[in-house]
Image (cartoon, rainbow, N blue to C red; front, side, top):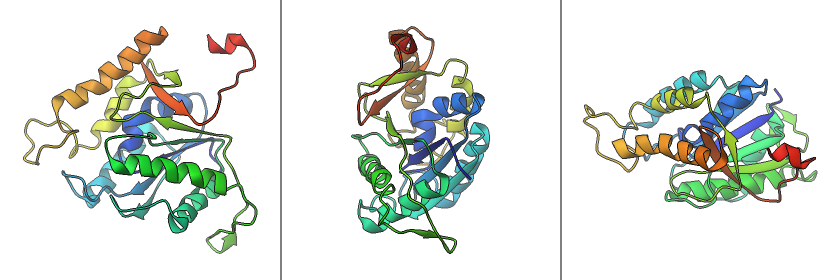
Length: 238
């Protein structure tokens, strides 16, 4: 299955938190989108890997993505080496996306920066003819995405561009709240975590509103880039 966009997250819920609005909008425009989670989030303070599996599937249904896979890397301990790069390369060659979305380059959680660099490196290596990968007994063809964009997570990193997600924020929050074990619930008996506070949940809305305010729309999501953006004409920037 060939996809237009493939979004990677170090943990289930990273993609939803960082770029769910953009995914929802692109799907509404006819694009095909998939998600690949690197780990099962088994080291998370709340819930369990099994609960995260169920929540990730529920969130995928809300988003309407074509596929969601998990590479089952070790939460907290995966590294950017040949073994892990080849796992990501298999996914890139399997789905042949034009656009890859992945974790923030720098963030509070160490897996986010690691995951970001791992996916970025794999996107380059995936285009090299002499790197051989096999999936389901078939040798895969080289494939390099045209662009890699990094969504914004915990830190308020200055975006290089934003996507207008007005009209998609309710569904975005619905996809995030599919992870019921992770986020604010005044009746939860789970331990507190940095993302389980009411303030964190509310921040998802006011960050999107503020990025929208700064760019003349109601809600927006921000991304950083690895190379210069290019447009056909100045009118494309309006």
